[in-house]
Length: 134
Image (cartoon, rainbow, N blue to C red; front, side, top):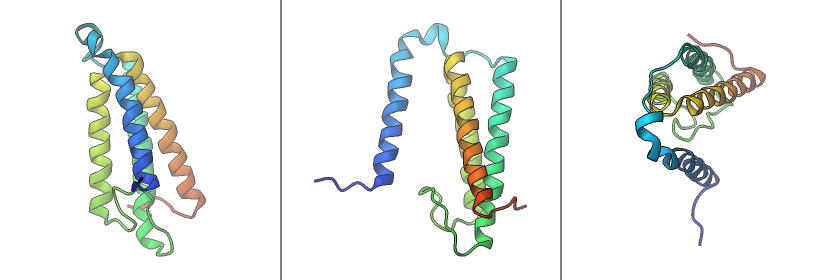
């Protein structure tokens, strides 16, 4: 009997994919992992932080639209400003830490995927009427 919600199943799929991407590379830990960021890595990480910040600022506007709710289950349907800001700060720090641990090619992929995903969320937020909230 399957008692998992759709969101829980999606989260499990994401964890499985991440595990498959990360764990086979541990054998090369000495030569591939924990390499310093290149100039390109810093630029991509900066763009990822910018995309995350844009998503955060539009997410903060949800409190001004009672008919809307947050779809991120970690934050809940009507998160406070502190929850939203804390969540995005944690995501930004975790992304930097994971990026540092990954080989350079995978690091760039992580940052580029995040830029695309967060940009999509921000555009969607604007589409449903949310704006930057300060």
